[in-house]
Length: 57
Image (cartoon, rainbow, N blue to C red):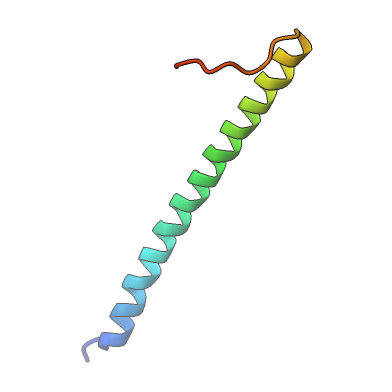
């Protein structure tokens, strides 16, 4: 007996949701790391009496 169309779509959708959630977790982790790194640099520089400057990478 062949699988139903709905079961197939549900499986496909579940795979897409899993992939999306994985990418979202990685994105949030990267954003958090970037924020913490910037905050750490800001605190260190303010401690030295230097304030944020616009600098290229």
